[in-house]
Image (cartoon, rainbow, N blue to C red):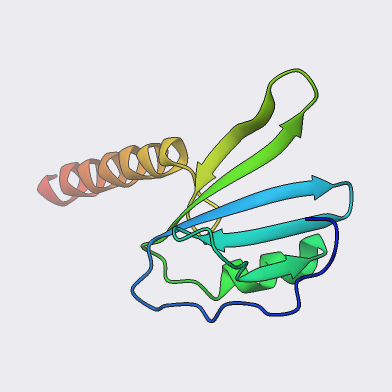
Length: 107
């Protein structure tokens, strides 16, 4: 899709899966799980603004075009830009802080 689509699909608030494709150095497109019409198309900033308005329980799969492998999944993340690994790390840090606070309160 090198041309801007004439119609962008309205975002369904119940949708939880989105696919973000980097078409070239300056053009991105965002689809929902239907993959019919794009939800957002344009520059990084434009598509990022759309992503920031998505529900926090959504998952976005980001793809880039590889000359040898075709479309390659680069990462999956939430609209708040965290990956599963980031959330695990944050959870462990939070648990550790809670343990430290409990230990301090016992003293």
